[in-house]
Length: 255
Length: 383
Image 1 (cartoon, one colour):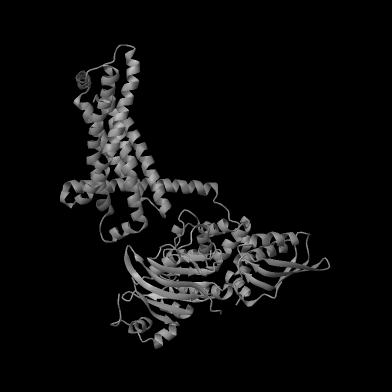
Image 2 (tube, each protein chain N blue to C red):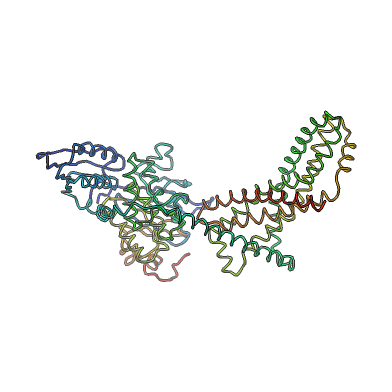
């Protein structure tokens, strides 16, 4: 795997409503890796993600996607960057007025000129991939939480994006579905080389998918650990990090 | 791992024909969502010459291949197999094989025939519609009962009513609606007086404009206009608010906490409407009459005092009462239907939208319907 960075975060200071939750954060994400953003509640995981996908603008700093700053990009150039993304939102964010099939067909219709027949086929393929065959005609409101999440992933993957952002993909899913999802992430990463940026705190899935992990902390407002999951669990000198990976309540706990 | 080739760098198709029966298509380059539709057209063109018995697709030189490309290949394959050709994929790299596996194309292809779904039959549609109607009716009656009980409870134990909420809704449905209600009432009075003046002038009966405007505003238009405005402003707001709460499971949370949504959410709104709508109606009466007065004074050369006296002579206190009574009923209808539509919301954002529309439509329809009933009724009891 080449070590070319696909996302570079430089001096990012960000937050919400004037409050600073992340202070001068720096890190790189390399092409083709599965990158996990980790941390307790309120440490700025979602803020970081929203800044990376250009939904929020940081107070200071840059987010470079293949060398281009998404914060400064506007109009067509911004759109070009956004097309590299697929995003699974925490609440799945499927459009409620459209069926599942229409939700997934939407980016395909907007960004390719494939005939309807092929798009239909692709939609079925994507749904098949996430185990939702037969639910084409359902409305999102008619699906369970886990099914919505899988449909959301199918939509995020509709155009085979270069970078897939997943915001808590397995939260609220049963362990079997969640493991299936992890499998899907790994397989997709292996066969398409898709870079995955995953916000999660599900330990089992971290161990089974992560190439590299960063851990954010609320008090430090920054990254307190970086590395492979096993390495962090066994070798970190930060008690909070060790506790997190060993699922212990300790004095380092800072919620 | 396949290096991500930049999208759009293109692909190449080389055709080797070993007689008419064996074709070998060598594909190279990158196929992704950016160029897959062209790829589909090209492949279709190459293979349009008629049935070939054996088609071999060589994917050995493919540098990038995404799921749109896989869909194109699968589709082409399906089409060829339908014509009786035999299709083979060779030199499939492990990552492309992996892609085919995740996408589970084999099962998709074999299942294909089952996909044609039939819509429900006419009888099923009819049955569904009747069931819906029965459920709707049942819901309406249950809801009416609930609200009546809760209202009775509120009158018996006024200290159990959430008055803070009620005052908030009085502000929203009442005070905030004053400007628009007054403006519209004034204009309606003005327009009516103007139209009447043109006709009555022919008979020298200018002064009777006051009777016409006074009576129709107080008996009909005041309550009606006010109710329609409130239905549009607040009935819809009630539906949207309760509907959103239903969608986000807040109503369920209240129920589980042992708090009846009817008492908790609906009664404050109903009480607020019950107090504000009649009050707005009285204001609307006064302002509507003054709209007529302006026409009388400016265009008909009547004195203001003469116009007022004539209005007084035309109106009976019972007229005012009947308008007041009607507006109380309208208030119940507007708030009741608004809240009911909110409770009926199903699905997400779209359901809320639909319930809001339906709150306005059924609110206004019920207002007009009851107005017609009252007109008939009052005619018989000589109110």
